[in-house]
Image 1 (spheres, one colour):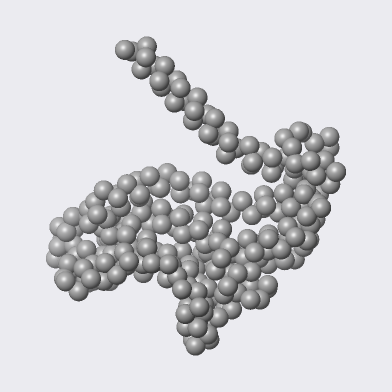
Image 2: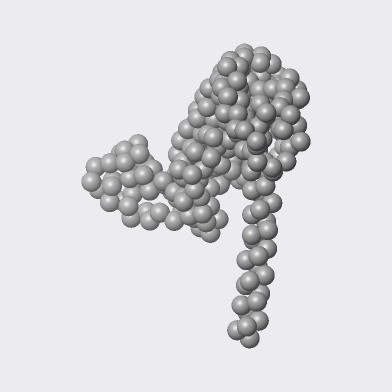
Length: 274
């Protein structure tokens, strides 16, 4: 029985290694081809370069569009994540602590937002009426509206597990509503806040569809849209395309590495205690 159990575990471990390699192979190919010359990179293989061409990254950085779009993505993703986390955490706190019928309906309305698809025509009309089309403010608010339902769902389950006795103790000590939330409750939300930050930041950074419809000016494009344009422009220079793709990965990896230890705890808390 024990031998069979060990064999099954060995097969599972081998399968995990194979799946990991499937993910790592494209990344390794991207890294290797980013330091090759034009001729070698045209093959797009895992073969080591005969000579490392680190100047490919300098060539990419000399293109002003890459730096500008990098800043645009950072701006849009950061503001979207902050707005989403703050509004969702406060909404979830109010709905969990004050379980009235109205708040229950509001929570159901947030859950409906998880499954109802966006109507692009009416959304565009609304943004045009508000003079927010093709603006950073408009795209940040739009992303926030898209991400808030899922983020509220995460926070709702987590806040439900925080004892109400903490609220009562804080009120007895003189805390008002705002002070209670920001000084007592919000610091306790750190795991789920970091989880929401990572998920929303990555989704916003990698999104292609919303900028395509709602940002007409290329000067406001983020990295993904610029990468699409860059790919069309340098389709014969895969070394430059690979270098640009690698630059696009850096902030995503940075955010993930900083907060990855909170992802499992945040997701589990939101799923179990809802």
